[in-house]
Structures are given as C-alpha cells and as structure tokens.
Length: 152
Image (cartoon, rainbow, N blue to C red; front, side):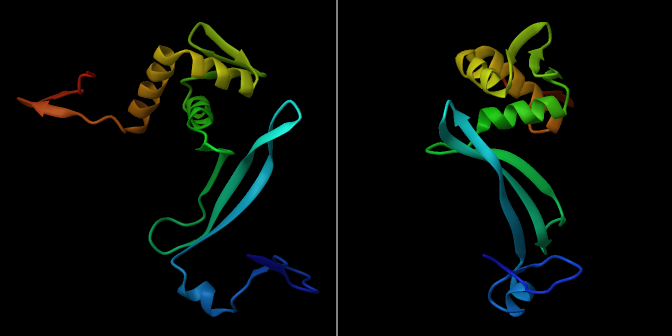
C-alpha cells in the first residue's frame, strides 16, 4: 500500500505504510502498477501491468516485467508468448503486423492472440522455439549424445 509524503522536493513522494521496520524486514518488495486497460469493444477484460522489483534479498533486484492480466484467466500465456517471441525474434513485428516466418499472424496484438488461440500446431511450434532459445527444453544424454525428449 502506498501513501504520499507531503512536501517532498527530491526523491519519490511515495512511501509504504508500516513504518521503517517493514522496509528492513521484507525480503522482497515489488511495485505493481496498472499501465492500461485491455478492452474488447467497450468492455474492459483485463489490465496491462508493470512490476518492478524494488528490493530483493534472494535474487537480483531492480528487475522489471510487463504482462497482461485477463479477468477470470490470470496472466495471459498467449500475450506472454507474443512478447517473448518478439523479444527473441521468433515472431517478427513490422508496425502493427505480427508474422511467423512467411505466415502473417495478424494485425494488432488482439488479432494475433485470437489467431494463436485458433491455430494450436503453430502456437506449440512457436512455444517450443521460444523455450529452446530460453534454455527451458530438457535434454537427455545417451552414450554422450544429447537428445531432446520425444512428444507423445
């Protein structure tokens, strides 16, 4: 919970409640803010959220993340796939158009989300490529040769 300090000329005018002790005792402190609303027509269906790690005693501090929170769903995995895919050049973005290789996925983020929801095979292919780039695909060694697991 954030309160405003009165008469602050330099530094942040925001402070957390609970006194000074809470700032010292906490292992992890995060600043969570809504960047904007996600709408379908005029109805708000979620929020675009930015999280900044203000303090972290258990991992590197001062990291930042942006993601979509969809009401009734939680953090949007499709939205995250698009963001990470664009960041690691798996999905190409030119203006408002998103494409995967030679395939035009959609114009705009919402159209791209709907297209990925409808096309399971390409969504899984993009997911596998992103996981491989991030090093999240397990490998097994047989006779000194690394092999990827076979999907059932």
